[in-house]
Image (cartoon, rainbow, N blue to C red; front, top):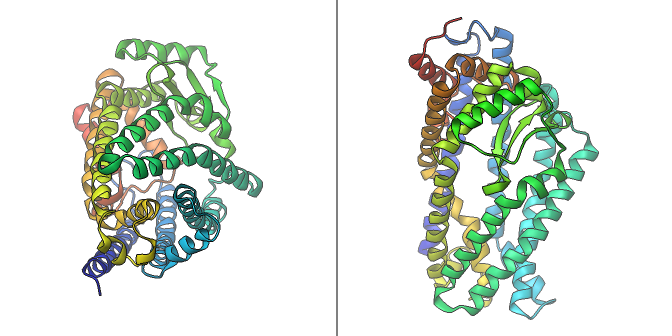
Length: 420
């Protein structure tokens, strides 16, 4: 057995067992605190709502066991099980040109994985979300969205994939640097066009028509030095009862978006506090910092791929036949299939970095709006979205990009006491 095969299997086993262990801890911890609303939440959240959030989270976490097993089976079937060899051999009978063959290989593998994941997504939407009162989608809307996502993915992804494969074939040993520039350009282009060209394909966006709320928001934006192309309301209620707010876009295309479900639930002061939190991300340049970090990591990964694709042991150790190597498309596909196995244990670092930004944005909101209103808004959002107030600390450290509710509220309380 190849050394890489042993390393891959051991790492895969460790990663899988860690995911299962974390999910089990999460369920046990939530159930142990199910019958009591945590301190600082008793005035706004009743026991029934707290228990609904606990049951909702546990149900979603139990489904994650199936997702873990499915992804494990897919990965092993495609690599050591010989699935990639079968796909490569199938397309070899149709295409002799390396670029065309590579496109067919990668696209077919991605579509196959996506199709296998559809049943779990359907179950999550029409069983779990439906049971807890969040789902507003119909089956027709679900599959229409699926077709839209697939079409947009192909329209944007196929040219990018062709560019990558061409650079890998034609640009010599330093292809990874040219590919990185292409990746950076593609992502910046996507950030620029998403608000006005892609997002409206899935949702309807209308200008905010509440004069008093609009005036309040514009005054806050002026105070924070933020300029946007407009304030918009998104018809999120067409698909779900979950609520949110965000700003999106890049440069002059920046826009602020509110879910209609959020506007229906929060007061004007609470909406202002939520927006101040989002503006805190802008003021602290969190988005830019994350983009720069993402680009730096992608450069490192592409450099690593540039080295690995020249090594026969990289293919053989992961179940790819020697007859198919060296293949730029196979190297690209194989690398991005197995990379999550080796990077999973570093996920807490990413979550820690994200939570640091959330604390900074909360502090900014408390300074420029009202900590009291932000707390009230957050509690309403936790309640409306059935977000558990008692996550397992270790599970949260691995997965949660936002701080646990109790810690977040406690920090805001320490900054400014609640007074009416």
